[in-house]
Amino acid sequence: MVQKEAFRIREACVVVGIGKSKMQEEIASGRLKIFKIGRATLISRLALEEWLNLCQEESKGKFKGVSNGN
Image (cartoon, rainbow, N blue to C red; front, side, top):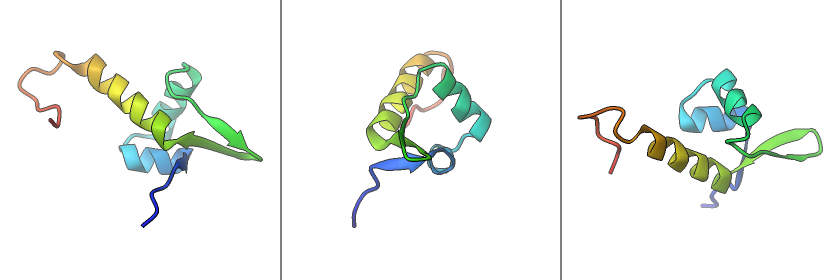
C-alpha cells in the first residue's frame, strides 16, 4: 500500500486529532510548514511528523505521570 506523502489541512486535522482552527494557528505561527499546488494547500507527511516531534518535545515534563507514547 502506498503511504500518503501530503495531506490537505482537514485530512491532517483528522490524522493528528486536532481542530482546524488549532491547525491554522500552527500554520500562521510558522511552526507547521505548508505548500500549495494549484489551489490546494498541503502539508507534507515529513512536515507533519517534524511538527508532532516538536510538540512532543515541548510537552515533556509538563504532564508528569502521563505516558508520552514511548
